[in-house]
Length: 238
Image (tube, rainbow, N blue to C red; front, side, top):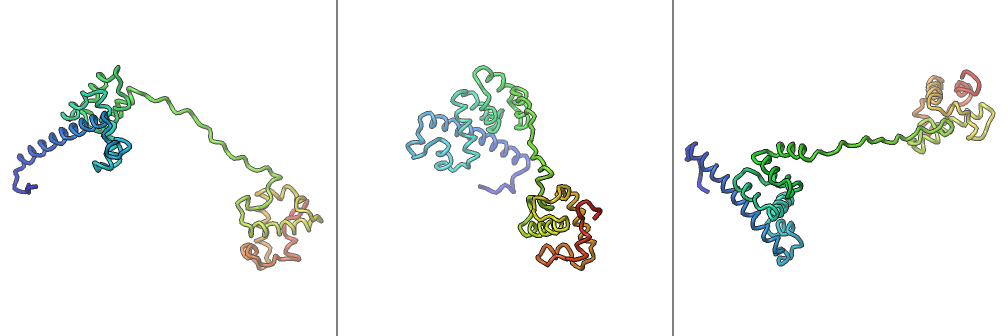
């Protein structure tokens, strides 16, 4: 192409307008030829399974560009007048693509008349008025119920790691020992709640045994003797 730096502003605008007009005419001409090629199914002779494949594999269009041209080409077979609208610029390719799913023999004349000269967003608003969608019905999202009080077996819940579970069960074993019981499933139900477990954890921190909860969780031997007697006991104040 020749350089445009020497072209005057007025001439540049005129050249651009002419180029846009040529582009619109060329686009309409491409659609016209695609419609006829589709009607004859000539894409099969080029080892293409569809017009879309022909556009992408033989003509080099992107998937998005091919989709629009195939849809508008088939629209032009049903309503040839859209080619004139496309060539004149009264309707752009994207606009015809949007209209293609709504035009019928009954509404084509009126809908096309209202669509001419509109932008993509204006066309979307027009189609929303012509073809309103029903309101989305309300949905109810099921909520997983909290486990029953008697089902809570650890302080950390079901997501606890195996190490955390073993450590917490060790604490429960000591609580059982203080209550004179040995079976895990006989742990008092009030100690199964997260609230009571939190209180027990807090009292563990306050025992003054010189060992923190994290150390205990990482395998250190649990405190014994007087320190353990300060954990909550069954029927007592803890």
